[in-house]
Length: 594
Image 1 (spheres, helix red, strand yellow):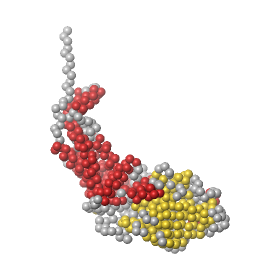
Image 2 (cartoon, rainbow, N blue to C red):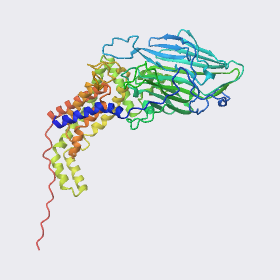
Image 3 (cartoon, rainbow, N blue to C red):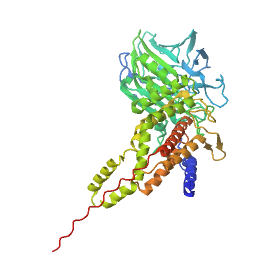
Image 4 (cartoon, helix red, strand yellow):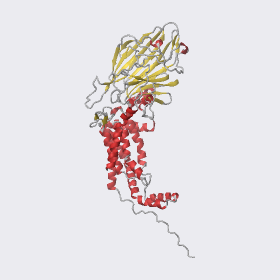
């Protein structure tokens, strides 16, 4: 590598390291406006008697912006715990819902010395959230003082409350396997008079990051409108210009209508809480809320926050002896594709789309994930499974890339003749193109030979990218110095600068530069373009530096295999098609003598 190349590499690396600190220093993020979602229970939809309708069926409703006063649970909190082999479910009297879900098989903080999951280091969903899952929101008519009575019968928990309005609320939680809970919420009129229920909400849960290494940009919410899955994430709430420069933060997302919400969910990168109602809800609402500072802070050092979601139901009137009952299925666990696909088939819904495996690239992600799990089932660890899949993909594409490499080398060898043709017919572009095509056909080369293999491998790469970023199987899997293949392989952070040192992306960048130097230039490429292509790997190093170790491991192995193939092709390469020559210029006819 010459001196200029070294200077460019050093400058690019420094820009990579200092980009985000400089951005935060020059354009500090604006704090999000304080919302009304900071206490245990609150009203989110304005409640008025004039909103009442005459039936208990779901009616289309468009609630106004929440402005009602807060309703805080009064009295001491009591907890009730139920355990399964997979999780520990903690219920609370404050709101009569599911306060926290503790996943026994997943550590919250991952280190290289992990041996099993310590009970004090488990993933906890809905932790520190102001609302329990399945809390009812809608003012004193449906909340009262917010205190419920909890009783347990085996794996079933019942939360009950009678309000002074004559309304009785009964919530029944039947805990099943596979992180599932079947819930019935029953609202009964016991006063002997009609009870007007305002527009109200049922809490889905609050997604928050689980540790200092978690990515806050992966927090979000999903919902299904009967035709397609829609989503909102932290980037939508941050509302940054061009994704980098701070804008005016948003605090609430309210969508839906015509009772078309088939299910709603909140999620982090690897975990989700989903609520699937038997009858569709009117709308879904998501708010960005601050969380107590005692919880794990986000990596940037900003105050912790969460995305709180709820299903919105329209106002209705219960007659003197009428009851309204709604049924739900809750999923509170890992975003594991096989498990979610089985649940989707069982409930005849598409809850597995939480994995974001839809579309063309999503199909490749599914195939690659299944292949990786199959190799793991054969005894390989996940790091070796990634390497094995990369080798298999390379072998499958070997004939095509081998032919492409040879074609590019022949094209490079034929450059002098091709330039002669271009120079000869520069004043006649049409004839020049015909002569060039005939020349390449005669020498069995194609201008598309180098592009086709790359185009065919793009779906595989994007499928791999999507799969590795969402596969919970890689969480906590180790490889050499990397303790977690789902996160960057940071070995230490430079003091004072807060710059992480990630060896795998640096190795990947070196292999990409090496590969770029071995790749022959495309025919007719401008020298400036050649230099741009030569240093293009630095852009990928910048983009992928803080991506997961699993992805950079895949790309590094892919680069090494490509380099080996190019070296092997070079040693076995037949001599270039040198005998072919550019057609000689036609001899002008002799001038006739007068």
